[in-house]
Image (cartoon, rainbow, N blue to C red):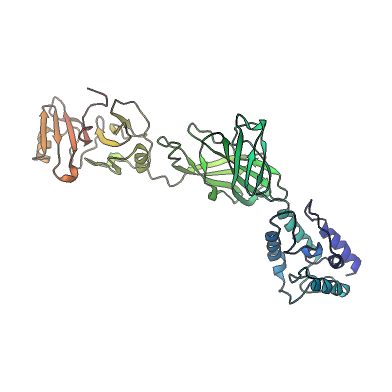
Length: 438
């Protein structure tokens, strides 16, 4: 291979230098540039170079591993290998050695193709410093037109007329992750938190950019929810098998701004050719729904439900929603979404499960087998010695034992002397009448 051919290949490699990367070639490096050797060496760069881009040292080491690792480490090869340093002695040797070098000339040199590939590899990383650049954000659609935000070391402040009725936005990068998406290729996803000021809340938005040049591709759509906006879990944002996915926590019926969201879901988006669209939203760790019709009532609750649980805890325990409903001054009787029919959960107004109420058409029984339709005689025989008869239409089971203190089961009897309904729980609330009734 002639030296003129070498120059041509070197020029081809030089064409892939990242745009805006200005490097003055020292004379020794200029001599070495007559051969398409190690890409960084061609342009006088090494791990001690001080370039405009802060991550240049990390870039050098990554490049070195990806390209130069294919060759054995040279004892001293200032032309082609990783042994080159910018010291005077090495530069002198570099100049002298370059006079007699042939392309590729050494097992530590690389072909023009490898050099070009290496240049492209470097170019894809040097141009975009994700933690130090200007982005355009809407603060999760607070404004319709994205406003510029310049971040330094991952943090920035947006001001001006384009940020809505706020003095400023405090912006922070929470996650940067990279992957490949069909029809887009190599992309980088960046998760931002945006806190409008003055306010006591923050929002998030997830945007995707081309890794090679930093151009924005798109963003995930805002979640349309009636409650407070959900929260991305930053460490879970990733790109796998061409899909953008993350875990997101949503607010449940019993959640507040102070407690934060409690419902964790796996959310996945795909690129449809023009935008990211949601492909799936699946509850994570959602407990299997419990069929309470197969469980029996005790003074402590039913199945996995225990007195003292909050409504949110009860929902988690049975894997079903317990929708809000009307009530009285002290409590409310709530049904379970999807049944069983005839089973009500009584919650105090300070959000505690205080009783379990069984009425028509339910056939749920107590732990001892008493159910709607059982007779007075059956109750007296079953709970011998632990039954109070405050009236002819009620029987109250008061279990002995300190652990049951203050807990009862009250049976409401019909005109035929059979159980019409019953309620088990805290004595104050275990009254077989709707909450709010006299």
